[in-house]
Image (cartoon, rainbow, N blue to C red; front, side):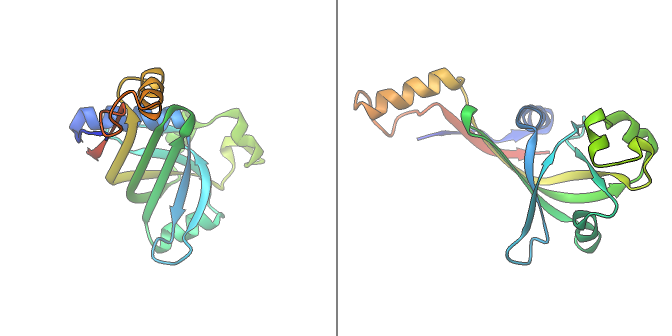
Length: 171
């Protein structure tokens, strides 16, 4: 049985930032009221001090058009090798702010934007979380693995502490 710990304010932002920046790639889901929902892998470029997640996108992408129709998005992060998971629901806003594009630009982005960071199609998307939930290991990967192995071998009660921790992230 895992442990539960809801996080608030700065502790919540710190956990959100730690998981999102460590996992880096998420499934960015739009059109949440239609089935199947649209999902695509996206790399988070930054988690700011307020807990907003920033992405780069083309103004001509389906994702941008979908956000303009319905700004509610869901992000799913998973790094099974470290038992780190994060789900974020929030509101997406599209910006063409030159200063922010300059700040988050990486040379690899040129693969999507022929004219580089000055390409008129470059936009950044800010996702402001309204609801988030995390699953993590509280003692680190090795301790969690030892706890699971001990339980699997019948050396401890399977309902005892499994080394996991989960909870809401309240920003």
